[in-house]
Image (tube, rainbow, N blue to C red; front, side, top):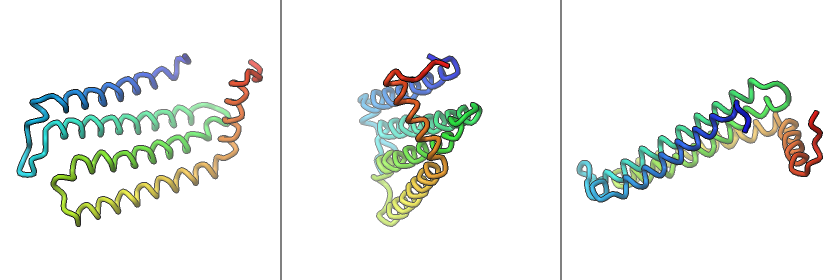
Length: 160
């Protein structure tokens, strides 16, 4: 494994650990049976919300760091940084809606839910538009990267 990219494994390990710990702790009886406030939100749900939110935050931070590392490299690969960050933002934004809705569903009204829905619709569409724009602007770099990957898989790339 390339030494400058070892950090990716650290992020993936912590993301996986957060998801597993959130599921395990949220499912334990004391967390499952205890509630908070008049809305009777389970502490297990809160633990899972924190774990999933943290995992999404780390996923976005990983995408940001990956983009920064791509920008620091020379050559056509550096043009992929914006596309990587836009894709990561789209995935995190779309996933954050499900995480937030699962936690807030017991205590938000339909009016507030509609505002949340439209806010996320706008954010997801903005992230998707950013990704499309990044792909359009950097399409030559994306095509070149796909070509290099295909040559590596086929074993036809020289080691020059």
